[in-house]
Length: 187
Length: 328
Image (cartoon, rainbow over all chains, first blue to last red):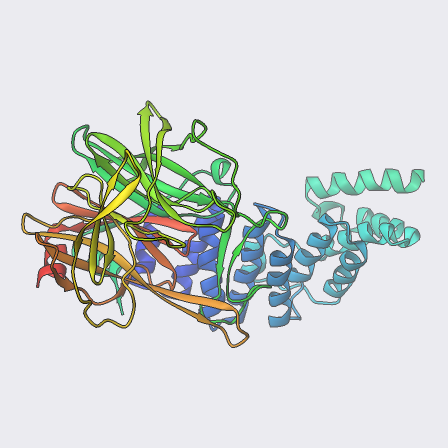
């Protein structure tokens, strides 16, 4: 029996929020994003656990990111998450990313700054989200700072990240940072 | 409220998710599946509706979308609800897809002139040795008039092509939208158009007209309409039955649309007298579910349904359970 079917049976026999979330995560893993969204949204609506709700709302947003061109729906979900737990940093990061994709640099910068004021939380949901900490929000701030006329701040932040977070950046982020730095100092 | 899937599993049946790969769907909803066991070729066919939308339903109203508790989230530059159909074959033992093929409608397509595009909520039927998809099409008039269209299909390997298309007119007068007519599998070109009172119509593919061949007289009291669902199939030699839905459409406190769908079985004797309608149930305890398929394979009934317009499932229901539900 496939893992999806196993999890489906667990959910049918015992429809707890945990089992529903496992099913949502499996659909997400299988790239069945519409089905995943249904189960994540139900989890967000029904779970009394705010951290579980928070994670589920962000995952709903990710389910809309794949088909693309659903900016307002995605932003609504990340904003729901911020309203729910404003002291967690992750939703600020994902919202900042949405603004980045649409070249809305002032909002990209604003939400990166807001997220950086929050303490990182090292829990299961942060790990499941793939949120690796302040380095992500710092990059958002560094990138958007350039586009809103804060060239010096952008250069400083890029340099700071290379000097202090070189080992904590994944390859993609590191290459982007290095590429940006070359451009920033050439100009 | 009975969760039918749980009842089925506890009675020895099984539940099977149907998925289609991301490359075909772009991650949006696949729903309202139908299925049909073709005894002549010993194949179990299915059809799934795919749209470029994902349904958002905040069932408890806690995290509404930008547009309210219930809406189709479509691309922000595409306000249409565009349906394509994926047809395929299920493995009869595992009920997993053997292949899934987008129905090729290129021979008969015309440019849509309304924003619900494509053949929606198809039911599979085989009449006079030809396979059909029967659904509603609303894209041929500027006001979205809906008519049942019967698309003849041919299967060549894994290529499924629409070869004929008939747009059926209702038997009396004019109407805005005809949908959810249920093919009567053992009566060629007949449909259960309504269940309370029962109205059976027969289509003439030469003229595209339909004729009422049975009307059940007065309706019995029930608080909601029974709306079309699966095909009408044989329960046994004495009875036919189908799975229908009811819908409660309402507005949120802010005046935005919301809905709850439920299902039940309707059982007829051979003279089209309703002998039973079961209590309403949910399949998986969601508020939007939709059944568009039911067929018999060996000693089981197979029922296909959509979940929140985002996912598709097949339930394998033991014959004994179904007879118990429908006849006791």
